[in-house]
Image (cartoon, rainbow, N blue to C red):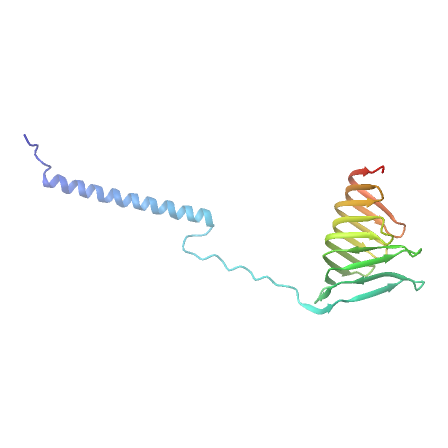
Length: 204
């Protein structure tokens, strides 16, 4: 016995019912996509992001290759020497940048130390120059028996003072001392580590 099929009018009503439901579902999916894109990007979909501001490099007024300089104290003795691979003066600024800077300072007794790094920056202040050595900083006394290693070091050659807030390693005959932060009186050859000081001494 066969069951009678749906009346033609019933099929039309079902079709008319499905079409609005399908349209509503598609509209809901579109709304979810719109809101998710807005939430992720922070801007309405279809709008391009604002153009990035161009990086403005400071203008260079002077560029030198292999520069060298010597400074003298009031008695006419050599106070310090400086040289680097390159040195360029920034326009409208009282500072210069150097690559592979080497700075040698001397005490009154003729002894001294040499500091070198991968990069450096020199600020020309009224009371004293400020030389900041950056990346792989090495400081060795001219006698060759003591050294200092750090990542950044600021020198004030007029006051013969050096300082850093970074980690420091001091090495001498039979000893290694680590610390964080340092202040150094280069004229008196005194170094003070500020924090987390740890030392290792080799008795042999």
